[in-house]
Image 1 (tube, helix red, strand yellow):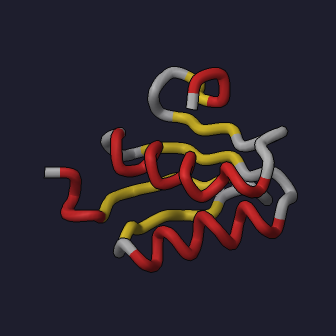
Image 2 (spheres, rainbow, N blue to C red):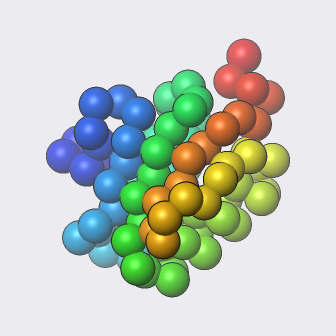
Image 3 (cartoon, rainbow, N blue to C red):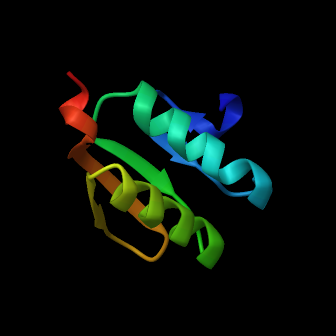
Length: 79
């Protein structure tokens, strides 16, 4: 994740290639405690990948501005 993580609570996907997006989203959400912020920008692919992951793993999120999400809880509430 490296340079695309801001602190340990924000993942900025700007400039990430599509083939890396799903792995980065999964690692970021599963390895950090909410609330988390994911910035997808205008990429429909990245937005869909994030929403699909959240749906698959029962992760709740809110979509704020276009391309900005807050991960609230889920995935066993990270116990």
